[in-house]
Structure formats: C-alpha cells, structure tokens
Figure 1 (cartoon, rainbow, N blue to C red):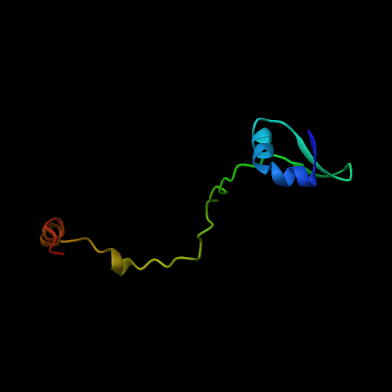
Figure 2: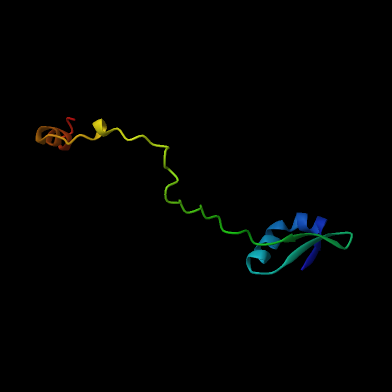
Length: 80
C-alpha cells in the first residue's frame, strides 16, 4: 500500500494496524517512495554470557560465616 505523507499523518493508527496484519506500507512524497513502515523486531535482552562478572565482585569469606542455632532461631522469630 502506498500513501502520501499527509494521508499517513492523518491515518497513522490505521497504517500501523495494517503493518501489524502483515501488510507493507510505503509512504511517498510527490509519488516517490520515502519510507517503508515495517514491524519492529521484538526486544529481547541479550542472554548473559558466562564469566562476564569476573573481576567485578570481591568475595569476603568473613561475610559468610555459619549462623549459630540461637541466631537462626532469632532470625526465624524476627529478632535478628
């Protein structure tokens, strides 16, 4: 489907629906094609790559000491 710029401006919503249905829409200026409306690529975040956090985090073993039974009980009861 070819449409002029003024018509595209007035019927943008309908043109977007046409593209969503799979129709090709070309916007023309003075009869010459200027822009094609095409469906957008779905935005998917890139998958994290193994090892990309290497060197960015520092492990401090003092922060990961086992809890005593009393500390576990206090934590469960909301006193910790």
